[in-house]
Image (cartoon, rainbow, N blue to C red):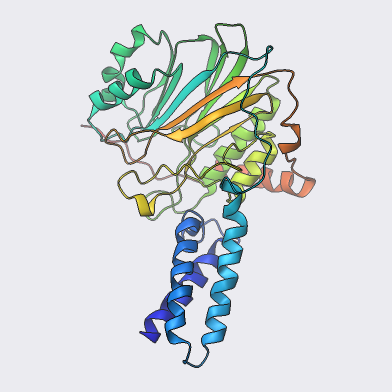
Length: 359
C-alpha cells in the first residue's frame, strides 16, 4: 500500500509540472485539462496518506501533496462562487433585451438529430452554433430555418464544420481560416430587434492529443489570430465555441489579454462540458469570452443530446454605457504580445493531420 501511495504522489507531481514545461507537444499540454481532477486526487491521496504516518519520508510526501493542493487551488478557486467579483445581473434602461445563445459541439458521428432539434425548440435561443456539423447535420437542421432565417454555414467532413443560425438580423458574416484552410472560425455582425449591434465569433481549433494533433501549435495560433482580429472590432463582441482548451492555460490567458475580453466563469463556475458521459472526467473546454459592454446573466450546460460534449447556454444583454466591467480587462504586455505573434507564426507553419470522413 505504501508503494501505491508513493506512485500516486509521483504521478500527481508529474502531471502538475508537465504543463510548466515550455513545449507544445500534447504530452505537456494535455495535463492542463485535468487540473480539477488532479486537485481532487491530490486531496484524496493526501488524506489517505495519514494511514502511513509511521513510514520513513511520510512528512516529505505529505508536504509535497499539500503544496500541489495549494498550487492548483489558487488557480481553480477563481472559477468558483467563492472568488470575490463584482456581480452585475440587472439590465438598465439603456440596455438591450436579453439574448440567448446555444453553442454545441454536436459530434459529427452522432445521428440523434431529433434530440438536438428538440433541445433548440425547448430552449428557444436567439442564436445557436453547431460545431463538427457536416452535410448530414446541415440537412437535418433545415426545418429550423423557418424560425432562424439568418445563417452562415461552413460544411466540412473533417469534424470541423460549423453552422450558425439566428433569429436576429445578420448584417454581414465571414469565414476566417487563420492557420489552415480546413479550420474555420466565423465572424457574424448582428443587429438585435431593439437596435443593438454586436459581433458573434465562433471558434473550434484542433486539440493537442495522441489521436489528433501532436502539438498545440495550430490550436494556439488559431485562437490568438482570432484574438488579434477581435481586438480590431469596435462593437460589443461575444466569442464562443469548443476551444479545446481550458480557461487557465497559458494560451487561453494570452487570448483573453490580446483580445481585451472578459472570462465570465471567473467568480461563478467551471461549467464543464466534455466528456458528456463521464461526470468525474469532465473538463471545461467549451469556453466563451465577451467584451466589457456585454453582461452575462446566465452561463450553464444543458442536457445531453447524444454528443460527447454538453451544449453551452448563455443569456446576456448589451449596455454601451455601463462601465462597471472595465476593471476586469487585463492587457498583454510587450513580451506577451511578442509571444503571441510567434505562436501565430508557428500555428500557420504547422501542418495538420486531419482526415475527411465520408459515409
